[in-house]
Image (cartoon, rainbow, N blue to C red; front, side, top):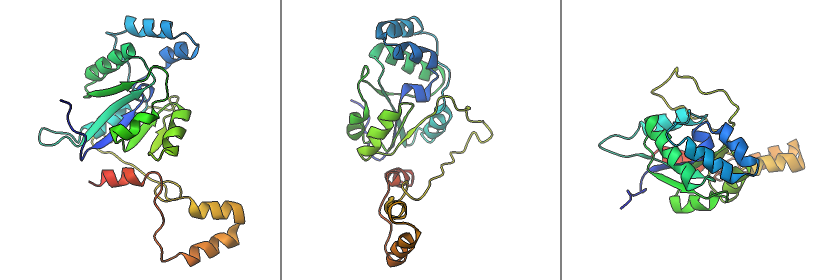
Length: 210
């Protein structure tokens, strides 16, 4: 029986966000899925190199100990199950504990976020991120061409949130964009005593404070 996800921070992440699969992905995007699966099978025992979000995931998983499992990382990927085997082996080789995975073989994965009760979805696929946000889930695109995070603070997780349209709604921003500065100032003055509505990343902040 699988361990419960209750009272855990659940982070869903794509394989390309966690590991460097750029060479393999170029073959996948060329329209030859059989060649892609063949390459992944040939490299089954070759651990993938850490990707852009690897450092964050490793630090989050460090909050787990024998007394409490506070964080669950779930692989949510357009990959096939064969590639999934390599992902889990790469996790083991890189000393991160991965226990759950959903592999959709090219189909959009965002529909699995609700059953997983995910608090955050990280992906290199912009369309998947947009669909997740539209469905009400905190999601962010990982830019695979970015520089890997440094190791200056190996025991710290630092997360910065914007306010408008992130922690809080974009209500005021929409007024500014459509009606101008005067209307924006009037809108803010008239609602000064009212709390701002929640934004798309408020559930993540709440989960982090549990």
